[in-house]
Structure formats: structure tokens, C-alpha cells
Image (cartoon, rainbow, N blue to C red; front, side):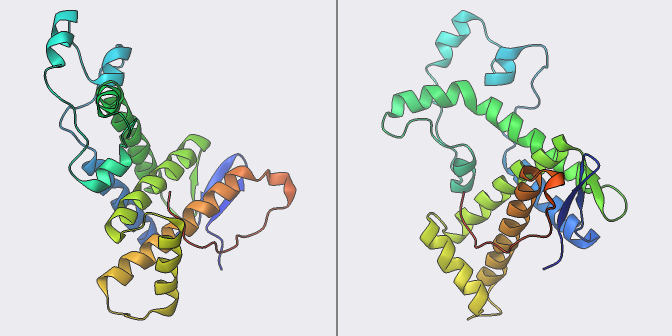
Length: 215
């Protein structure tokens, strides 16, 4: 299996060809779009707004309690923005009210950072550590969306999906195409994590092809 990432001179080199980079950038952009709640970016100078998306007086905050905050209708987005407490709906709602905007903002920033970094010229593209870490996060979110669409909830589900890809029982199936994409993204992500976790001086070479696992 050819090298996908390599750590060199303080940067991570990405050896994906331009077509694969473009595909990954498109997927990152689609998840970024899914996380758009129409609220727009928060001002950088207000920590409360950055966290909650609320620029309200104390009286407005009391009034805001009359409007419930619920989980996203799209189950894939709900996996990206999970409930804080599944046992207590009221506590979960309050947690979501205070944190969801900030989580959306952070995820979208990582997705955009990774997407822009992959658009660099030539092969390999060289990422700084911030860009490489953003790519790890972005891959996680893309895989979560694909996992939801494919019905992957457990390790056992992921193993069965991997078996479908290996056996190619229905080669023309759209599901198999998405399953293969999920499998490849899993490998890319685990390869990148391995590179970031392995000191360059340890003589690291290449990457083992791991099995698919859900986040």
C-alpha cells in the first residue's frame, strides 16, 4: 500500500493525487454546509456569543427559555452535535442551548481549514500541524455522516461493512460505493493519526491497512 502521509521538516506531506484531494475537499465542504444553521459567524470579541450564538440582555435570556432547543432533525447532523445528557431531556436541552453554537463554529472552522489546506499546489501538499489536526477532525466528521447514512452504529456494523467491501457481493451497488469510500477515509484518517503520533526519529515507515471502525 502506497504512502499517504509523511512527517517531514515539521510538516505533514499529503501524497493523495489531485483527484483524491478534490474528492476529500468536496466531502469536507458538504459537511460544513450541513452544519450551517444560518446564524453566521460569531464576533471574535465576545466569548459568550462565540459559545452560544446569543447576544442578549439578562431579560432576553429569560425570554429565550420559552423557545426549546431540540436535537437536529437530520440524524447525521445529530451525530455531529450529540445530546449532552440522554437521560435528562431538560438538562440536555440546556446543554445544547449553551454549547451547540460553539461546537458548530469549531467544527466548521476545522472543516474549512482542512479543505483550504488540501487545495495547495503540487503533490505532495504540505500541511502545518494546525492544518493536519484540522484534517483529522474533518475526516472524523465526514466519516460520522457516512456512518449514519450506512447504518454503522457499532464496531460489529463497521466490520460487516468492511466485509461487504472486501467481498464485493454487489459491485454495482451505490451502498457498496459509499462503503468503500468510508473504508478508504478510515484508512486515511488512521494513517494521518499514526504519522502525527509517531516521532520522526523513530524510523517510521509506511502504514498498515486497518479495518473500518466507527467513531
